Length: 116
Image (cartoon, rainbow, N blue to C red; front, side):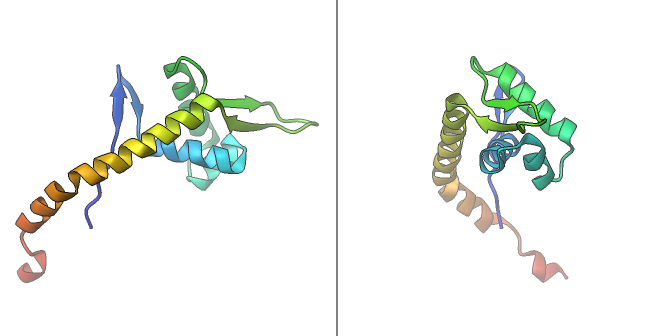
């Protein structure tokens, strides 16, 4: 199976499938740490990625509240939801545009099963 992965580079800042998945999981769980655990990444790594995204955009993509008695949590801001929506739309458009080229390249591949 062939996959196409989209990664955008904005002056050295990357936005790709991993950060998009992290944002989706934060939206679903309401927690940066829970999102990171689901992705099998450390709490520190998840926080670092959130901080990187927040610093890269004009407005934060994720807002968080400290834990404690009232509980903590995190959520996507309007900007975060918009960035995620646009990234996923761009991925879908790229998949559609690339499909005939990927199929042509796949047809040119050798059949590895014949070499065994």
